[in-house]
Image 1 (cartoon, rainbow, N blue to C red):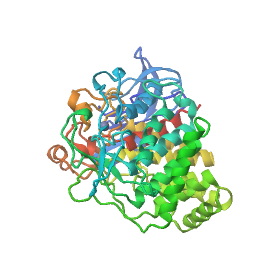
Image 2: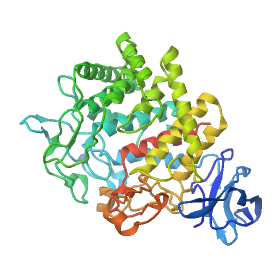
Image 3: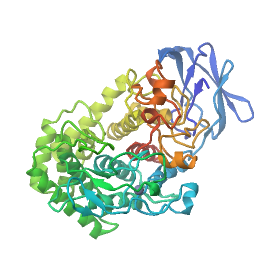
Length: 512
Ligand SMILES: [Zn+2]
């Protein structure tokens, strides 16, 4: 397919762009379901070479009448797509259901069909290098594997809560689970990972990755890896943040989270940096880091917002003044974006600095976007679709802050890319779109032979890091370095913290 569109469609008032490959002459027509031409547009002025293709970008935003359409240029045609008032409701519900499918330590019930399973990983876990045994069941499996890691959990929780904050109405329709109940499933597990002195264990997993089996079939000993200051900082931040969201739903739960955040902070204040490395014999996801400054700062910001104490405000103000504000990444390793986004809620000058930080980041990114609307061209990292969703969140906020349409359009382009306007022509959300991703590196999908729906693929990655990428993608330009093959963990794994920013972005853009 050489005309790439958002395969889930568009709302009537949304910007509508398509990327056309190889059909650069003349004009593009939009046809309705009866085959009648309803719009004709020139396409040549936007000609650009990217990822070894000459492409043209066509803007057909003038199409606002609900219906089902196709785009045509020369002999090429797009997949049919709708223009409708609510094209994304079902997809958002399924993106949220993903977290239910990832549940650990509880039953995934019959509604999950072939993916239903009894409680998994509910044996006691041993603290690495000791004889101490702990009960740490619950939470979500991180990704294609069954580890549970605090650092990425904090990102996932924060994104989902931001999505809820930006557009709670988007989550009124539910399928398998409700957003706040689902986030609580993770938070309850995270609380169990805190040591008596306030420090937080980095992760719990078996020592090694298992084969492509269902979670209840992984029966090796569960090992709790040592504490780290990054996990403790992220824990303090996400608990303090979450406590504000649950204050009206369950005050006692909210207070438990606030107290846990305060204890984590108290420990951090006296702790030298303890950056995580897998201990000997443990080879599951490391989520290591080069610095814990940003995690500590994010914790200060959230505690300042939740508790209002002078000491947190002072730490937040000092940290923000000194921070490198040239970018606002919403990473699992670099949390500066959460500092900026959440810092906007602080009073006075600090709030202003943070708002400027977000707008400046969005402006710089806008200067870099390519024909597909994304900010990365030369190199796409493992999980590039997370970066694209993150960028969309920042563009959305910049639009809210300034009212400038260019930021809103950029946010929408990130969504269009994920749902089909990309050089491989896939809808990167499993089981959605005309050309859905269906073979993720995801144990329950491989073990059952049936893809779990609503998983966001990591997407194109230029590093050629796994056997399938090496075999099938060698020499492929960055944006096309994707293969829908379960062996390709570097281009087609899934993660809770890749779904989470897409949930936030999609909910934000569904705002009426
Ligand atoms: Zn499990």
